[in-house]
Image 1 (cartoon, rainbow, N blue to C red):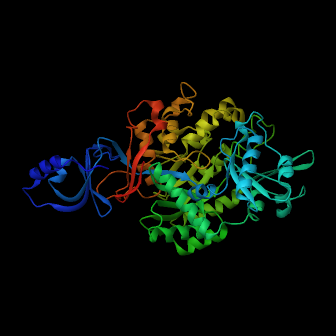
Image 2 (cartoon, one colour):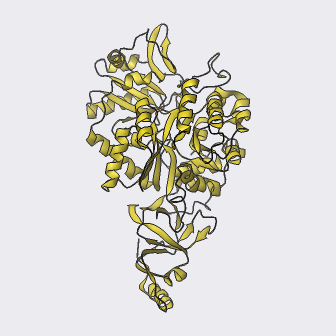
Image 3 (cartoon, one colour):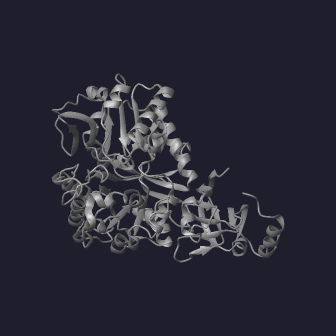
Length: 544
């Protein structure tokens, strides 16, 4: 940023030279600041010292109190607190940069062409990728493996659906995993057609393939984390809630952060693997300024797009199909009771109304007489009216607005006219719980928090469809949306006293925007650009 003019600084210094001043590092001024602090919602300047905000107000009053070593002229641009993605797959996004990208493919042939081009360049021994979505194709059916078999008879291929809940593999991969027509499974499906395997696996059976996919090297893991950080900083994200990590990856993140090789802050949910749960319950919560390990990520069901979400009544577009729970009810309740006796949060993926019923009722039971536990329901996509009535401020709904605008083209086909009314009901969830945490679920959706903001406020996709918004009664205001991406997201992490607003005493994480996201025309919101991103007062990204 350009330094404020010498004349202006001199004038302010003259005004403030009459009394001793407190030393500080930086004065940010000439800004349009949305603090997300109800005691002082707007400001034009703030002071930073040792990586934290120490005062917020006007340049004149702050220079009268502080002797600053440097100044930063925001040139009238809008500043908001560092943005928080309350549900994403940060590490997965980084790894995705090393795999074939299948997002946005318009047909199965498009998918195959990308895989062929990727393998021609990379020549990897095991082809992996992610991002296909048959709902975006003209033929909206799951693909089958025959073409993959003909193109790659000797190289295993495993490509993941955009939501991470379905996998297409070729025969070579099936053989390596020893999956046959007789393989038994629970908590998902191995799809068959005409008595043969199609190559599509849904939810739990995917682990059979995961067991044979070569893991990344430490060098590849480090690069993945650094790649993901660069992408996130470019969108103004300063804290990410990674929804499911192993202790090994968490330890790598911790080591990189402590050596300043990774500066993004992370709320890391531990994957629900028995040995992981045992390890952290024995060793306790791990908390630093950059890393918070105090929760477990649990899957109740699958995804709506792959018909794995658990519903109370059959799918409207598939007779006698209810989806499936990926964890048994008894196992879920036992785990919930165990975690309720610990300081850890329980954060459960729940898409269908049946899964949400199990999760919400279990939370309600095991948290009775326990205060301020903030257990999270991740996604909460389809919630029945009887479960809405059980919601309270001891629960946090962690939702992803772009899911609504991605799914709206086919969700009513899955759910029917009545059930869709209780789907993606963010305003109603907010009314019941008092706060709502917003995220993207990237790489299922795009990383951009501005797409999230637009979907929450306008309830439209990037084509500005539908004209009047999808179930517009559940749109959020701009103020609610900004809180959901900052202060309320921090609250969901038990971190509201250290981040989420531009308030004295909190980390100096903030974003300078090229546009005023709180006032520009609604349909221009997705195109908002980040001018610069700061973590602990240090510049970590500047646009060109």
